[in-house]
Structures are given as C-alpha cells and as structure tokens.
Picture (tube, rainbow, N blue to C red):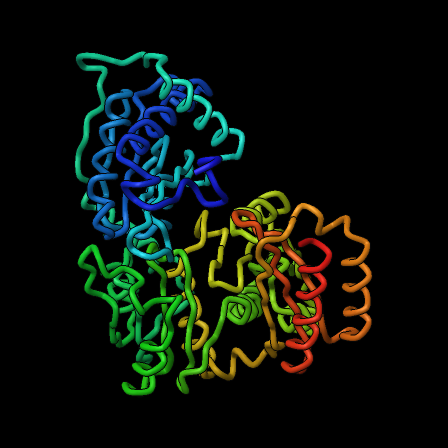
Length: 452
C-alpha cells in the first residue's frame, strides 16, 4: 500500500490491503503514540469507535476494539454512525481518541480507518507518521508493553450516541423546516437512520431512498456519486429538492425541484450568503480548493466575499480554516465544513442548513443556487507520464500560458499531478463547453509529448 496514511486516513481493499492484523496493529500503535504525547496522562483513556455498514466493518471494528482495549484504552462502541457523528461524539464525550471505519464514497470491497484526536479533530500529519513508524517497528518483531489485570481496556456499547448526535444537529439549526418535502438518498450508508430522523424532527416531510443498508449495497448506484435515482425521485414525488450523502455521510450534494444538480460550490455559495446575513461568516471569507469552479469565485467577488483556495482535500480546507479562524469551507464534491458546529465535513448538517435557508427565505433551491453560474469544466486524465516534471517543463509552461491567454478572464487552466497514480489531471474551465474541450484536448496532447 506504500505509505499507509493518505489524505483521509488508511484506505484499501478490506481483507487484502486493509486486514484485521493491520487494523489491530495500527490501533495499538495509535494508543501508544498518544500515550507518549501525554494525551492520556492523569486519567484512564477512552476511545469512541464507529463504522459505516459495509460487511468488512464488522471484523475491522472487532480488530480495532481489541487493539485499543489490549493497550489499556476503554472503548465506547457507537456502531453504525456517520464519520462526523464519531468526530462530534469524540469531542462531546471528552474522549481521547475517535476511530471511524469507512471508505466513504468508495465501492463496498474497500474500507478505511480514520483517527480523530481529542476534540474530534483529524490527527496531525506528524502524529500519523509516528503511528505508522511505531506500527512498522512492532510489526517486525519489537514486543509491545501490555497492561494486565485491571489495566486492560473495557468495552461497552454506547447506544445513546445516535440520539446525542441528532439532538446536536437539531440544536444548531437556525429555523425549522415545516412545509418542505425533501427526498433523502442515504447511499445505503452510515446516515440511513440519522439523516431521516434529523430532517423529520426538524419538521420536514421526508421521502427516503437508499436507506436499506445490508452490508453489501453501500454506494451501489445511489448516493452522492450516482444522482440519477435522486433526480427521478424528486420529480416523481413533487419534492422541494433532494439531498444525497455518500457512504459515511461527510458529503452532501443536492438536486432542485426540476432534478438539476446543485453541487458543493453552489451549496457553499448559498450558505455563505446565509451566514453573512446572520453575522457568522467570519472575515467575509469562504475557503475552497483549487478545483472550485471559476463561477463560484466570480460569484463571491460579485457579492463582496473573499475566496481562499487550498490544495484538493478537505483536510487542507480545514487546516486553512483553523489557522485563520474562518467559519465556512468545502469542496465541489460536497464536503462542506461549518466549523462552529462540526470539526469535519458533515453531510447531514450541510443538508439541514441548506434546507433551513430554503425554508427561511421561501425561495426555491434553484433560485438560491442561481447566485452563481457554473462555468463548463472539462477534466482529462493523462496516464503514464512523468508527473514530477509538471512544474519544470518549459514546453508545458508555454502551452499553459498560451491557453490562459486564449481563455482570458472567463476561463482557467489547472494541471495537477495525481497523488496516487502516474498521471496528470488537466482541468480547463471556459464560458463555452466546446472551447473548454478544445483547450483541454490540446493541453493533454502537450502533456503526453512533454512528459511521456
């Protein structure tokens, strides 16, 4: 698997890349590293462990719980809950560590392990590196120091986590959702119970699809990566709009009453204006990524708001938000972070806040989303090239400069090496889709010739 920790924890094919032995070993290593840093000093340590519904999560959860308890950590097992619920409960319960087992939007055979530090925040890179180092050291033979007797961790189910999390979601809503009919696509994932319960308690009339997880059907033709079913259901039921989550419900995408998609950039734009109106958009600034649609940037400029752009990945968005004290950030993919109420992307919270804006204004989601015009965006993956020379190739730099001159102020070019594969992603935005395709195609040819 190379380096174990990626931008979002450890992820791979369950029982092939991500084995029970790896899950157990990483959990023991995490406990030891946090103990080294003084996190457990002066008290008996506690961890919150949750998972999404995939079948492999059952044995991986058992391995993680066994590893933590064997290292002297008491475990609160919260069962199937969204990733942001585990993050929230880690903070709300004063736990020293949170562990979520999920591969998010990936297909069912995959799974992943994500660690949260005290407070429900993602672990710092240096701590992940240390956990990986300690894991490797002991995997190759160095014995662990193990507690015995009353020093071993105790394990109990914490069924109250469901209600505690839902109550938190309802408490942060600015207004109720009475009168709205909303279709929710739960991706047969971790929010299959939480999201319908929260929307219903908030006053909405709820129609659910993709809410029957069986361990095998997560993300299968539904959810935020497959919006077709949701679009059809919204039109069929005459709903005000629809909300789609991914497998671990840290994402939220939407469709309006006509079935048109409302992506993460548009959701951010709607929430930014709502938060500015409420006085909670600190610095009149939103944090996005370099993949944010140019139309989003232009809309924010027109509204007198600033857009800070980071590298792709919600962890980088979050780092920027925390460093500068910003309140709202996210990605086009639907990861939206409202930092006053969540420490990570929370799809259910995002959907609720979007619905609250529709209810408060009396405007349709389509009307609200009209604050920005999505410029056509073309993405071409160029495989089997030397991605390390993207920044140093004179031929490529000349081609990019020519493309940027052609596009002017209503277009944009981005060349991005893949973080996991030997390929370069060519992204072009333009006011006209045919122009975007033409420019992207020409640049892809230059990437092949210059870096191939």
